[in-house]
Image (cartoon, rainbow, N blue to C red; front, side, top):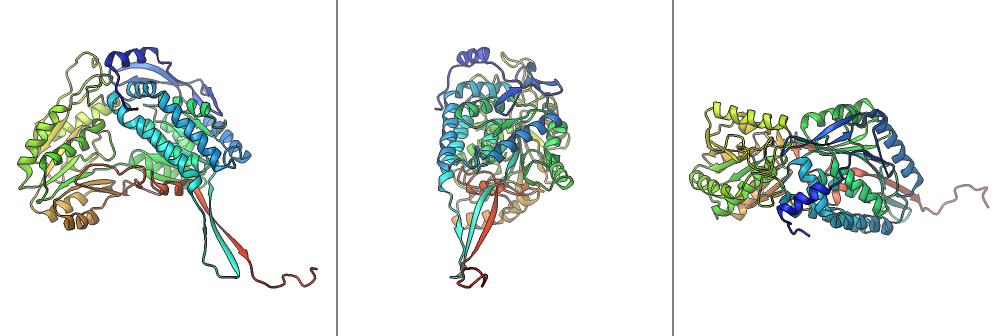
Length: 512
């Protein structure tokens, strides 16, 4: 499924694409009630792609109403697990059939390299939806050890109407992570994509309807955060919100919940993730490969980006040299060119933010080893927002480069005088989403992995686990639930206890 086409092929697909622009509510595309729209920009060119329906409170209310009607009717939640599984598998197959169109649409909308969309994002979306579909009829309830006089049953029930508020860095994949378990559990779902990347969510909603998902069960309401997002957070008819994005906006959803119906809030927020290289790390070529991938994949617009390299001082020079050598393979340019590994920053505002950090890093006294300037215009990049890989050495722990989430292709190298200091530096952050650890000692790997304050710790590699492992963070990186794995069902279901009295006694002596 992950074969790559040619640059010309992708350009041809882009020319022929019909760009979705309206909300998808109750199984149909519809304009915003206000008639308002916002512009979707191609980050690689700075040019307008299309105008998207800018939904507000009225549209959210209408979508929630239809979602609730669908849920209350039982058309989805009471359908047999086997039938729900069949629909979701058809949905995944349709995504696979339309993979090239979806990949190009994602690349145009987000600036992501087409090679990542084709070889990583689309296959993972299909796998995620298929995995949760297959899990539907394999989840069992429980009986409790209640003795001979009672039967205690513990069962899961769908919550009702849940909302997924998505980020712009992995639009399709984050949608799949959330709607997969939410729909599998029997809920009706309302999706608000990021305003920068709304089109693939709308395309997926159309494919879901074609697969047989009942009207009202999956609704996509594009719009600005301060309008559609806040309306979702405050709506009394929504039972839960799963949010991936910045810590600042995550705090707002907690406030909205407190001020409305105390809906369940699940947050996956930012990260300032370390790659920790201990003094006994082996195979430095492999370490360098993982470090480069961890920080520059998806242009560094990744919540698990290892933007801090904390390396024992005895290995720093050797490892840094190998990293600089590996970066040569990471070309930057037109996202629809399959050979490019880095595309464009998501927007002009974000480009300016990342460049601001780079300029501040130069002024701070840190040593600029690579990059630091925007990409000069080349064919397919004129007017776009491109930043090449940038590496700073000699970064101090209090430097903003080491403390703040830059969300761009910027690596900060910090030297540690001992392995204990390296772990302390890694934990010296308000975030705790992911950490990568490199060591040649198995015992030390176990101990250090436990000491690192992060929701996911990878050893001698960079990664996030897979669909079978729960994903989420410590501290400001979020709480309230986990994406992926069977644990993801917890945030979209209610646990109910049913207690049945089996004791052999007369309830009413007057009964015959």
